[in-house]
Image (cartoon, rainbow, N blue to C red; front, side):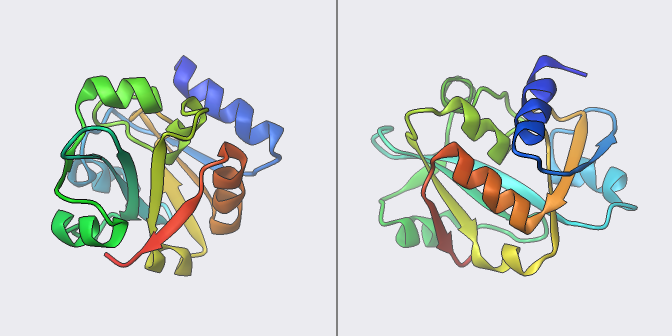
Length: 163
């Protein structure tokens, strides 16, 4: 278990949030992860770490893994101009993660709440959701209610979008 994973497990324990842990080889994309998710009953998610054109605003967009995000449509909903993927350096600075490991659990590193969080409204129709624990060698499954509790703990305002 990595330090990144242990930190998240400690926070979840502190919040008394139950979860299932599924270890697997490192996976950098949803396509690679799907083979390891076959027996996991949850809405699997993809997490996009984006920045605006000026680079002064950052967004974490969380949506179901099967959905495809149109960045122009997302930009319209968040009220910003052109959005693009943030660099690995920005991921590390704001979320404490590297490419392939972006997760809402990284929000614990953004104590100043610089990152704006947007969740696809359809995601919360699921009973359970899954995310990497800031390291792409495992998947954690928790209830949507507990996921919302975790987000509240981080202090980030969660906004809803339709992807």
